[in-house]
Image (tube, rainbow, N blue to C red; front, top):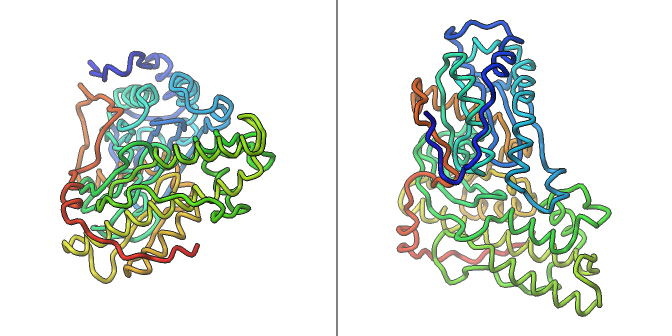
Length: 414
């Protein structure tokens, strides 16, 4: 019996006949074990249906992804029931494509790893239900995955990175700083107290109606802001960075969004245009909000590095900062973080852009990491549930605030 959160009123359960038909397209023997570790990863936490097959050496044997971006751009944001339906329509095809591309029979899999937390309840339910059907049919172990843990560990697939390291996860749904001491050993230093930076940038892009801009019509909000900002002058607007007096590693972006909304309203009045039309100052506003966001993220990250070094949680000379999540692909924000790592003798590492956004590879790799460490591998799937909200690791943000570390001023010449 599956125990599900009350927030998920509709739980997608593919028919046994459908899954049986899916598996019959492969030659397999349930319960077969292989010495070489191979994991199928399935990701449906938000608006991308993704799957990948990865082996223990980090080889990506096959992958497939279905993006819902185009649909959600038209609706002005992600509508959970729409995302759920699109996951339902595509999950079987995506998993089949990943397996076919890998040349791996389902019987050769060592385990199936799936995102079960955190994320949109309706979306998580689709991936979990489909995965549990596969696990039951194939008689394979199941590895539940924390979405943010997967983002944090992706760098170990692409680079040789040893524990501990500092990770900054910035996306449309999350924003946090954590010390990674092991595969499932995290110390949370700070997080967003309201909305995530990607969400804020998307909302600003919608308020600026950038989907109507000829250069930005097919871009996500964050990408549109980054693109347009290159043409703007950030000095045309003087915007204070959030939480300047708070000596902690927490973030806040809702206040910044409110300030930008007021600026846009004022400019619309000045230019005599209605809401929904493109402002002549749109590029300058994009440049200003991007710069303020970058400075805010950089300062909180700077304090996290200083705190970790002060407490000997990170090496004094060769510490590593990993930046991942969708917003990590923003090169302007990345350059701001480079200024911080250069000033603190740290190495900045980012996964390639395609691995910064949600994907099946990071879920499969997290499964490999857990399989090797012998952590969270389930043979009994009874009672498994998804968790739309779930913290990462042990929260020590109060300790960080109590340390009240003053951050040296850096010149953000980006």
